Image (tube, rainbow, N blue to C red; front, side, top):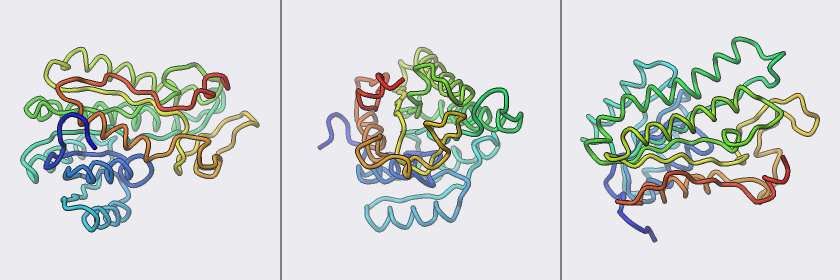
Length: 252
């Protein structure tokens, strides 16, 4: 049961929708009755997801292949959603990646890739979406990370991009929070195909879905449920949600 406003008939864009958190978020929002616009680079996966969503729910799932590092493609994504559905009510800034690990051995290519995807991508999408979210009094969601809250000994650049995400989200909220809801959700490790390379023997580059057993890490469905919860909160606003077990704080 939803608490607050219904999202039935609303329009939601989810970036990084081809797998993991993004795919589950699209399914969850569709379950609430929202039409979803699926954005990522892997068009075949988006097509399969759209087919599944439309067969399971009485909504429309539109596929817009998008590289979030290309501002022209991001602008087209936003424009396509508004033209197709008439409005934009929810933007989930989810696309992100980790590459490399320790600073000394991190290549410039990996550094720039993380900055472009994790920071530039969220900026481009937010900038293009703000006028439409203002018009709909909508919801802007950023998928942050535990890594963006607490210093840690591996992958400092990835962590820095998530500190950027959190700072950007909160500053955007201060700027436009009177017109729309702005929330950052900070999960710890999520059991998806996402992987983090480190120089610490306690960790490896295997996908988190292989590193962790069920119950040992956050599930993508839990993040998706948090996004749906946030989207239904009106007129109140959820500023920030942390998703991780209590032992996470003692581990580091």
